[in-house]
Every structure is written in structure tokens, then in C-alpha cells.
Length: 119
Figure 1 (cartoon, rainbow, N blue to C red):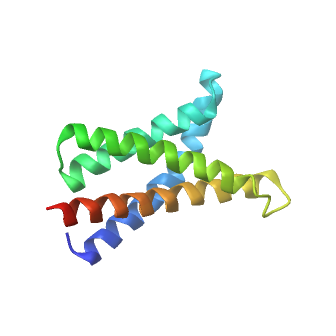
Figure 2 (figure 1 turned 90 degrees about the vertical axis):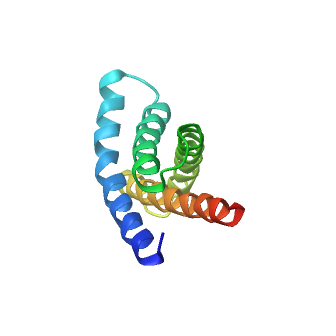
């Protein structure tokens, strides 16, 4: 896949992650569940869709990479949100949402590069 195509896909992912975050937070509140688990599984679902339609690897590899990337990205995003870069809670949540999207994109690029080099 060419660099321009990957950049376009990553920008689309960034937008989807940003808009999906509010839906996943609301879903977590309605289910009265741990928001870390709900958000992680929501992002795992988005990652599986991305992997199946864009990367077109084997199904097992798609699911494993999607699961690991989603959970690691959410964990690192929560840690980034706890850094208290801003004074208000909503700005820390926005920091965590953007950090999650950025971490996911970085991890997907790493997985893509490893897969390409392995070929």
C-alpha cells in the first residue's frame, strides 16, 4: 500500500476514533460497566473492520492485532489523560481520546511495517 493511501486511511481512522469515543462512553454509562473494557472492545471492533477491509490479512492475525492494539492504545491513552496537562476534566478526556487515536495509528503502522518486512 502506498504512503499516500495509508495517510488517508489513518486520517479517516482518526476521525472515526474521535466520533466513536462519545458513543462508547455513553454505551459504557448505559451498561453500567467498566469504561476501560467497553471502550477497548469498541475500538477492537473498529480495528477489526479496519484490518479486514484495508489490510486484508488472515482473520486470526486481524483479530489478534486488533485486540492488542485497542487495549494497549486505550491503556496508554488513559495514562496520557491522567498526566493533568489541563485543569478541567473534559480537556483531559479529549487528550485521552486524541492520544488513543494517535497510539492506534502508530501501532497499526508498526504492525504494517513488520508484516511488509517479513514478506
